[in-house]
Length: 637
Image 1 (spheres, helix red, strand yellow):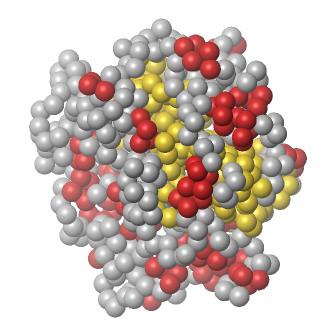
Image 2: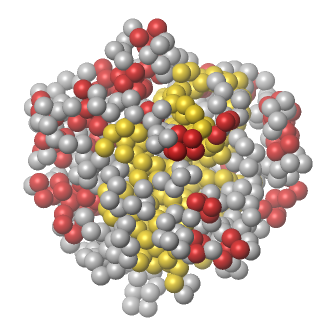
């Protein structure tokens, strides 16, 4: 998203470019072979097995990725292009009824939904999402929740492979697209915009070979005015209290996501600052400046009619502190309020990837998506199953860390704790440390990164992080792939002590610049997900080289071979990844197709025969693409 490209980090912490320059000077990464990385990095960490006999081998590339890729010459236009071995259909476009028979918006020229209608419709800005398989009781099938290497036999025939709940984020929708005007003119306009943001939880089912929404009592929209609650160290703190006495409500700019093994969805609030503005005098404090608050925000104009978002209104002075969190949602209980888990810190969350650590600890990896910001890790205080059994959320009691990357391929997780004298001198208590996590990380010497976005845990047990880009790097000439870093890269690391340790080893996986001019060309890696067999799905968000639209690629973890599975439409972003338990169905999103401009794209508009058309007038709508192999095989194969 374009608003990720600013920078509000004034610290002089050593840049990741400096560290990487030193690392590359020893030629430990750019030799072009995983074997080189394995000897200098994986050996001694237990990961050599994953890169050799214990994991995908170089000779298995064809077996992992046998599909015919989309050629560079075919990867642009107003309609998505997919591999000849695959097919796709459209699901839940913006304005689609939450349940069959509800009010619908189809992109008719000159029209937009009302606030009341939008509250009953799929939102805009489709982004992170996850599919929660349903069992015969109508609950989450926890045995099928995490895709495994065994994707055949009884597992394929389980109910959850063709019926479940889809939780999906609605990151953003700018006024010209949502309202048909640049600035709201009434509270009704503001409510339309607010109701288009947030999260949708919808029941979907494969009926006669086609995925459709179906009725379910837990289907719901969660938006900016939905009641929420807070938990963890910041809950009940004066930082969350307003003189106006309004109850906590809403979630906004929900970008990437995560999910837990106990069957809940983690929705991440990213560029929350852009929805606030000021009608009166406003001069940002250092804490506000660090999160990018300004008089006009991103131009949504909510503050013009909704005092909650007016930074100059003393009655709502702490409303800003109620956003910027990870939000936990139960897809199978529509009566439960979303819960903002404050122990995970407040920043511009891109995603929240869950992994199980030593002793059954809950470990969550998170990126702060802005130029020169940081990578974080949270570790629960105890075994997550034991905590749940005691009625304690594993996401409420634990430790938050921020990453520092060192020259020699090692790194340290630095605890964000009020017990640290550097933080005790600045903050009054742990709640303030978490509410101003960025400023705390600045003080601790964390490594500023090039827009940390999604993360995933791969078959080699390493954590892969996408770093989308940073064109403001000026410390080296343009030939250096990271200064300026216009195209982004992917790093990977392994924590010590089975994820709960404070040390880690890191290395590079891919540098996007190196693919330009080839059939593997891509830029600005964003969404990422690794399957259990060694495939890594990569989505892009940003200007692509070689005339391409944004795209979905599949990479081999072992060989780093890349194949292009899908390209989107003019002006869009490809984002969001979810799979069914059998891995025969993949859900991804096209966000802001045509940048909302019908002169660029009308997708997913169709003619009377169901064929996609480009008519130049129908308003394009964000939507989910349901992708399958024509032969019914594993996605990515």
